[in-house]
Amino acid sequence: MARINEERHYDDIVKHNNNNNNNSNRNFNNTSSTGDFLSQLDQSLSYSIEKDVDYGYGKVDAIWHISFHPSLPSSKFGFVKIQSQERGGKGTDQDWKDNQYSLRKIEEAIGRGIRSGCDKVFLVADNEEMAKSISGRIEWLSSFGSIIRFDAVSTGVSPNQQKPSTITPSQERLPEGEKIRKEDMREREQKFDKYNRPQGERAEQESNEKKLEREIQLDENSRPIGQKK
Amino acid sequence: MNQNMDSSYRRERPQEIRQIIETLKAPIIQLGKKIGVEIIEDYDQGAGPIDVLWTFKPGSEALPDIRMGFVCIPIITTAEEDYSEFTINEIIIKSMMNIVDKLVIVVPAENMAKRIIDSIESMPNSSFLQLRKYVTVLTPSTLVPKTDVLRSRERKEEGEMIE
Image (cartoon, rainbow over all chains, first blue to last red; front, top):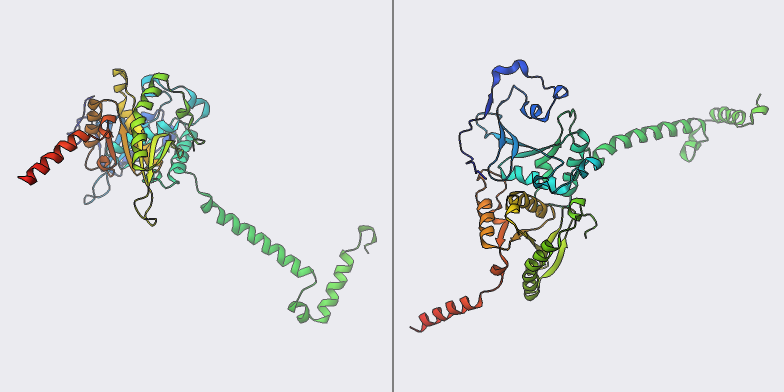
């Protein structure tokens, strides 16, 4: 296996710069293949793309070197395509049937990216469902208290994806739902309070006129349909 | 412990490989029993099995348990050597996800151990993950205490003191 020095001069780097702003619209819908997807990035950023990199730890399909600011070190985003068939022909096509990749493939791909010096590793799946499955598995495994929170480093992506593949935790989803339910409950209680007999202090404060009016209304409305005036 | 095992790990290993793994595991278990650590075979928190796990308390109840994981790589043919990087990547991430504090990779031959050590030590310095202190690569013979060698060294030191 040919080991490539990390500090080599990249012959195959595709350079992009700020002058290419005309093509800045990222349209992943039109992306026909994973290769095209890996070559796309917001053109407003200064970056370079390295393809099919192998530092001796396995092939990384693309590495984006992104410079956010001249005074900051550039970030390396690695993209590893996960395939149904394992290298060496050990795997089966089970992944396609289950619509989720096996753990060992996910672990291997993360390891490959991290060992190649990438700051973030994106695992490229064939469709959004598989990308979500990858992200979910990484999050689940990291939640046990792993030495490294791999979900902070790695996530699943797919070429046609429009939304992040990370699943919103229930803790973030629930409070809003809770609020809506509580508002409904308060409205319902206010209605009850308006028409029902008041309890406790409110009963003592109620005027005789209002009490009489309410009792008449209650008497009328609580009668069976046929006996109503 | 193995109930979360992924289907890819549930695949049956061939008899020959299983035998090699058992041979590699035997001195680890033996040594663990000798030094009095808790031993768990096929330890799995959901990320895949770790062949042997040593758990021990570092002297105080206030300190956390230390988990040392041993993963055996039964390389028997030259064809499989081509996939060693694939295997190593997987083993490292698997052990981290299983909350193993230190990983020991056990291989049958010295030349294989050297290859893996070289691979780990050649990792780029810019990487946020430095595996040199996390991973140790051994052969079963390295685990067996070389009592004769130690004795000769001790004898030499004693002799030097007498002189």
